[in-house]
Amino acid sequence: MPSDVAQAPGAGGLRTAPGHRGPDDPPPPSLGAPGTDRDPYPLYRTLRTSYPLVHDEAFGAWLISRYGDVRAALADPRLVAPPPGRTLAHLEDRTHDAHRALLQPALRGRALAALRAGVERAAYVLAHRLSERQEADLVAEFCQWLPAVAAVTALGLPHEDTARVREWCRGGLTHLGDGHGDLDAFLRPHVARRRARPGGDLLSVLSTARADGSHLPDETVVGLAGTLLGAGGEATHLALASFLANLLDHPAQLRLVRERPVLIPAAWVESLRRDPAVHIVLRRALVPVVTGAGTIPAGADVACLVGAAGRDPTRFAVPDRYDILRPAPGQLAFGAGRHRCLGVQLARLTAECALHALLEALPRLRWAPGGRPASAGLVTRGPKTLPVLLG
Image 1 (cartoon, one colour):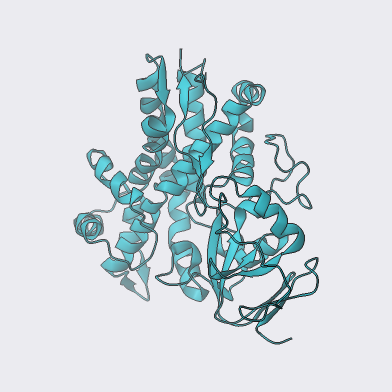
Image 2 (cartoon, rainbow, N blue to C red; image 1 turned 90 degrees about the horizontal axis):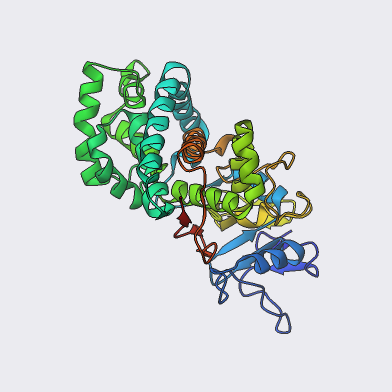
């Protein structure tokens, strides 16, 4: 099959690359269609059913929407993160494996116990600050703060710098080597101190790690630390906001996790499946890639529609329903396979500690009059406010 042609089962035969659509063919659906950022799910259904692999000229990428295809694409080493840079989650070949080997031990054992204690303390303080209030916005007063505090705790940075770090996180610290000047200047003295007197925190692990007998270069340590700080950014706080919104929408399930806290991890994973914070993950094909839906040309950008995959009815029964007892939710919100995001453990820990603290401090937590605000966004998505009654 020519590299510029993709087979799209269920879409009436061949779907051609830009410029090859027949004159009588209707234009394929596009992420740029009006209203998609308000409600993408009708478009997702059309794509999964009739256009499982299609080129979106307006968006400039091939769209993949079915669960199996998205999962395979996220784990495929031939599909890498496009410029401007590679993220920690998308590093390819031995570089990716080497950095995973450095970071994963830091989130186990004593370091993990210390991290959990710090995140629990932060969640407790933030939740109890609200306990004497009658109402609050949980996004502005809780969700936007706790992930940044978790990242600061993981790296062992001074807690008085949390507000500054939060602003950097909100600015998007995602790409290795991008070199945020202020962040670089902030982190380098901490790296030097950790090299001289290491502790049990993540920054100490990175600062004292050796490759081929030498310490990692400062710029590598700073880049990795910045990527972990990115886990305290928009995606994590939106995921946390959607998690709380789903439980507030379902009081019976909220009561169930209150009675059986062992269900909190399942409630978090189900929320990531139904309402991921990141709906579109971009990749670029290094070579022609044959998928279950067709062939992606070499050099093409690919949009993995995680938001569509999570509601694929061929994979999930009643996929629009939030169900914390759902068996094997199989969420893709933090990647899959070798590309699985290293921030997943930190994000999960943050969400679990958040809910524990809120359930303890706010036993009457419920929506304020007016109900749940609508989620919005195309690439990243979630509720912008969570107006709740506390007393």
